[in-house]
Image 1 (cartoon, rainbow, N blue to C red):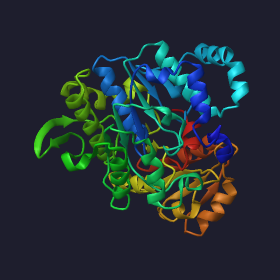
Image 2 (cartoon, one colour; image 1 turned 120 degrees about the horizontal axis):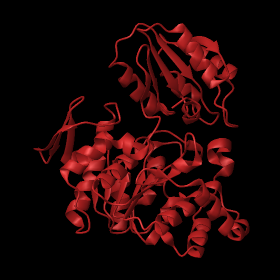
Image 3 (cartoon, rainbow, N blue to C red; image 1 turned 45 degrees about the vertical axis):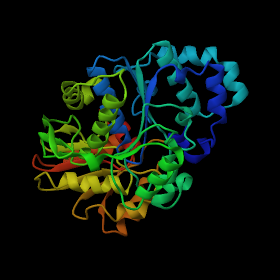
Length: 411
């Protein structure tokens, strides 16, 4: 499992997933799909889309990773997690196939999701890539209705490349022949990569922000081609960075409405789906509020772009002292991330309870180089309780640095 042990769990290539799915009768071809890649925002966009299709009355599959609390979070239909017995049955029924191919944890999970959606006869499945795109197991999808790429930032460089263009080239691997692709955020460094790949595949390409703008704070105004499309749009996920995710989602829905006769997504369904995304899909760990006095928020952010979003979010709040419960995994660019964190905060360094978890003492030593002061409590929840004991009602506590720190929180 990549989340626990890192790169040694990753199997390059699509041979295993192809063999798995062929043996299962290629279940991924039995329903419509939307395929989503990106460094940041792909999880939010995936859940927004699932919620919108659910509110429109369509039976909607949702495949995401990683999970926070339970493996079954990865595979959902209309917000309901795959039953544990269905997981057991899949493994028991395909044990010989699995043993003969020796696929990765992720490859088995993708095949399981595809079959679960086929057996349930979903109308559409919203599929999020794991790592990258080109060699990601989900990239066995041949004819999604739309491909959506959210944002490109530095993450998983050991497998995807050291530069943004290299990473973008991997994400662009989900672009399919004659299938429209939406790019949520127009980033100068990588736009040409997507344009070139789309041209090679004869895929219509749309930079969402060229046509759609999302403006405002709490109640958002949406304009399409300069004209007001929707007013009073409220997002169930907080943060101004969600504007970009929503822009990509809306362009995706707009394309599906105009280019397919099969689906009719009303403005009302869009408004409701985006507002109730958490309740409809069970999404956790995205700028999730756990307490009010003091403010307590957690988020699974774990790279430079995520820290930029964190700083933007903190600027919206008034508080006396900032406490950071912070843990990381070993295979991140620690120095690049730590140097961005606020020096005015008091840090309680912890270690997520996975083999990849970075020793909290080592993390504290790294952080000292950047003027970050605090103490060490290895256990995430002990660190959180210490922050609560230190904080006054007018303070702010943030918990994050890794998906696996948030996974140990009571959310």
